[in-house]
Length: 194
Image (tube, rainbow, N blue to C red; front, side, top):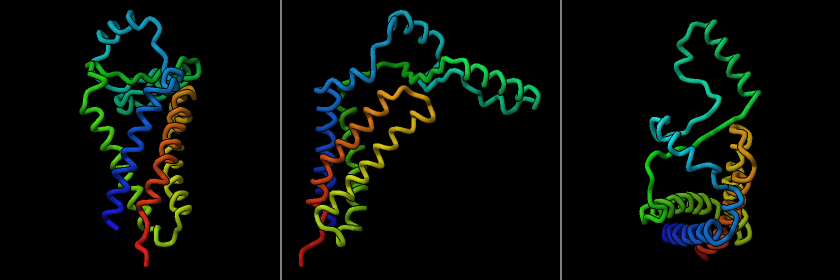
């Protein structure tokens, strides 16, 4: 069974990796969800000047240091934060100060290893249940794992108030990828006959 788990995970990772290339590079979806920043040429020098390091920045945001303020001052900061939050705009900025080559081999290798870790975990879980399931059940079991992964993509809609485009697209990508990988895993990760 161990060989079937590894083979299923490897082939499943290849399917997810190939689907990622098609979904994000060949199909137009990525351009719908992530748009070019208007006036980016003017904003980038300002960001480079003002932001000290790579990180995730938010506005409005509370600082860790506010916890150490006297209670009265903490309360005033909390009220200011709530007022700015209600007034808007809300901003979450994923900022990488240094550039990188978007086609570097290490980036693709890391992406493939991520998929391999996921499919190994899925194949291991499937192997634990495979003796009770026919092919259709193994397919549904693996597809359910993909559904859970896809639904996790929706949490930024709730907690970070992101527009729905990217979280919904990411969820659709993950679910469709796992629906493609599920038959591969269901076929390979099966109990021995007899």
